[in-house]
Length: 448
Image (cartoon, rainbow, N blue to C red):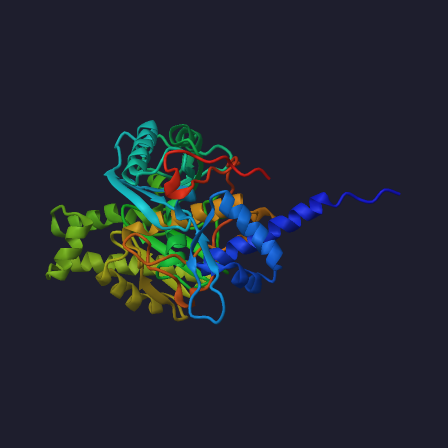
């Protein structure tokens, strides 16, 4: 009887070993081959073969030698950050933020523009133009961006890539947004709800580091929430989990406008704040101006601030009753205001019986952008380095502190495996770069 073909099993074993080496370098670089062998339990011969292949294909490079130990020094290795890049974008109703990150999740270029008010394909064209400009600003060659993660202010439909519940940007609900962006960017595109991305960003490099059960509430032009349970984002059957604006209180939930915008959003977000101040004071003002006036002693503005905080506390209590989070993070141009957070903290014990920690986000307006980078880098690592052969996703790198890197590594430097199970279209063979040796051309991809 013929022996079974063991080649597929050996291939899986090799990919698992490569994955272990990649994880270890991502979390502990610079590392020598001997250290990799100790940390992974793999033989020195296996480590040497895997590191040789990774170095040949441009993913890792020598960075120096060990020092201070008895005996000969050893060569150390790190990932080549510029071997591949991820496009991160946060599409908002008033602004578009674009960032280009390297393979370890650090931003190398960013851009910010007002959102094209025409919406639809005009916004898609704008994102494409901004990404190309950011790539040029970072001196990055065409083709080095392997994946784009776009945060959208609504619910992306997985089957059609249309975006529902995005009333502030017209036309996204009638077009295949992902395919249109892929045509302009030349790489695979993943659409994610912007508040979910902000939750991911705060969990990775912000105020939610080390918190497994987390709620993030964004309040500005609209209101929404991202929910994390046991380190995993809760997306729901149609990616619509956390649409806080549609809680059935605040305005009349049976009115047609509530079906379009959400009964809760109508009263707690910026339009509702402006309307309540106009009714009280007889004059118009922006939400930011109203909060500033409350601080300066305007009694009408102070009353509106108190009402807004009470409403927001009620919405948070609804989340707490279902999710029981360890921490609630408030973000957005309105939600992050310290005076509003103070009102929420005072009001929440009156409508929810258990203590809940409420804190401001640490990443500010960049939370969704950092979250898009987290999702993109995680997806890219798993697509390139055998994430399909392990029981868990390859953990995100903890990152390096810097002006564009979020808040640096998490306390204790623990690997971060948090992140949703987003699906991405096949990336095709990777196009790694040889660093400074060949900045204007792509190397042949690795064939598996």
